[in-house]
Image (tube, rainbow, N blue to C red; front, top):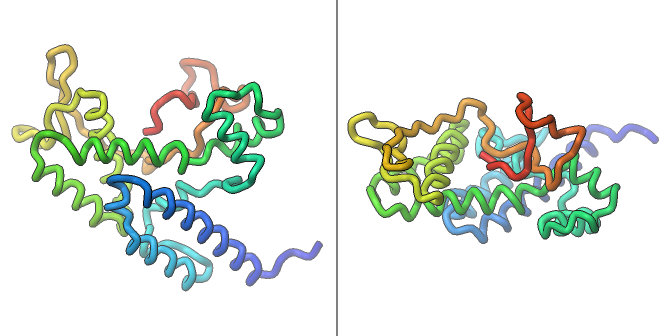
Length: 232
């Protein structure tokens, strides 16, 4: 078979990005807080950049690569969606060996796993019962950074604080004397928290629905992958 010419490759890449963007847009539209950060104006701008750049790239509208983190190669395939739902329903014994292999290497769809968790954390931060003005400033900074390479840094900070809020541990943010990001209370002791994204990875590469011997090192090893652990 002849190798596809460059225009065909570009059209295919553009179509794949647009398909993933539309899936992400639909999913974000159902969220509570993330939809106020990544609104229709943001999605329209990303779509326009994909359509007008060659090769398609998101250097202006999404330089942090948020869209790329939510792309999935098997999204929409009927057999994959069925297998994924079985995994999410903890009915792993009903998944065929071929589907288990695909799930192990492609992972679960982050729109089904990571996105709801991320929005829950942002929502928990948004409704904190203290320092409402600081909360609003932090959310405004997140919205302002959505077209910046630093977007994931802001997202990581609020995700961490939101997770601590969900765990009923967060008691303060932007502590006055130290200016740390937050303060948690554990067994009556206050602990200062500084949330810094040093890896530039906020979204996981994949989330395994079950242990995979090829990808899951033994407990205690340096590179441990466990779907039951927190995403961030």
